Image 1 (cartoon, rainbow, N blue to C red):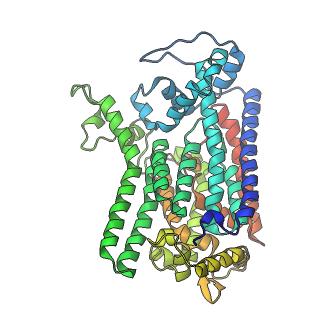
Image 2 (image 1 turned 30 degrees about the horizontal axis):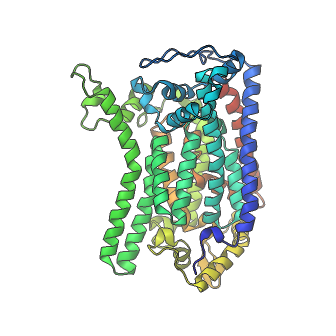
Image 3 (image 1 turned 90 degrees about the vertical axis):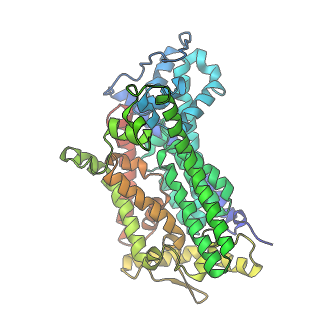
Length: 503
């Protein structure tokens, strides 16, 4: 009888580690809250317009003055930068064209909680403060669940509970932490993207499709998560056609994979259609905005270009050098993680995973084979034995870093050459994903946004975990990673909460 992933031999240890991850996630959220309150009370904000709240353009509603105006003001003062847009959309809907740059999942959650769980607080602190409180609740709770899913995904990928714990704790204190505690879409996106990858790797494709599709309702880059299903489909179809000699099965796999990718694209496309319906239909040619007349009327691209100056190489200006320096740590970590993997597994990268070893394909059947979890007891015993030895194997691999050895050299298990931990072929789709995002952040976007844009990429923390747990010279790099995270947490909570520019 097949044993499910959740019943692995590491399950008792996982429970203990999950508790530690949960504590780290909760502690990090309280730490950010305390720092934000501290900096807000000690310094004068650069912009004091946060409490301003004009009536909605459509269906304006009025509420009596709050009974606790001081508390209401304290909550509303934290609504800064993009948080203003999310709260405003939850209250009034999409009033202006530029609002459509902010996808609807977070505003919808804020609206739902403000009308249900936190509705009794409206007479005490007012409706806008309740909206803000709902936003803080949604984002911080979503982050805690994202950290738990991150650990579960890391255990499956790395097969090393200690490395997974190290990476998860690092995620809890990541350099973009201030955005995960504020009314931003980062927390919801991290939960849905990491959770979706966890269900995909676990073999629950339908749940994975749902979660990854919802990630496209949280952030526009959620559509990139379709690449995970594209990668899976490519390997499953090849296995069915070449290995099993079943062309009709390969065709079915391609069709079903394409449908899953389309489903992940649907939320973002539907939101663009919603914007077209509101902003373009029923208007004369003179009243239409320029993007309405385009062959492919993409509102999101127009807003990013017209209002924020986003475009290929448009940010390459000398005056933007400080922003490039601000983003350099996260970009450097991402590039180093990619280079290390490419040097460690050149044959896997060149072949897009098709040259993975038999052992890797066997243990990664959800990605590389259409066969699901019907395995023999002998295969299960072999995989459980390999999992128990994983930690020692990863230690040997880390020692090679400091000794300057061949990173691609495998660790022998029962006479087989098996790549483990961060050098596993399982990491490849995550490397491809982060590689595309790094190029986009550097060449197209406002580069300082890279800190939070890349902060939900699991491979960065897996690579950092490998560095942190490596003996010898790599320890100093581990200290630098933690120093970087702590410095950005302090700097971010200081600048962001007082309306100063920060990523």
